Image (cartoon, rainbow, N blue to C red; front, side, top):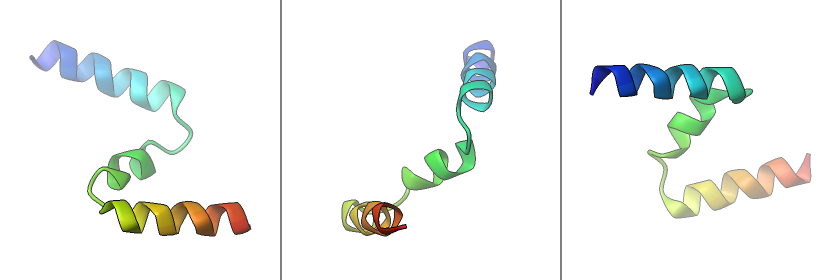
Length: 43
């Protein structure tokens, strides 16, 4: 499993501008994610 994990991390950090944000969003509730999306669209 470690090789797959490393491939995933390499891919994530290569193709995503802000991978930490994508990872953090997984731990938010659906309501909180919707609020963040609303704030981003307002900027």
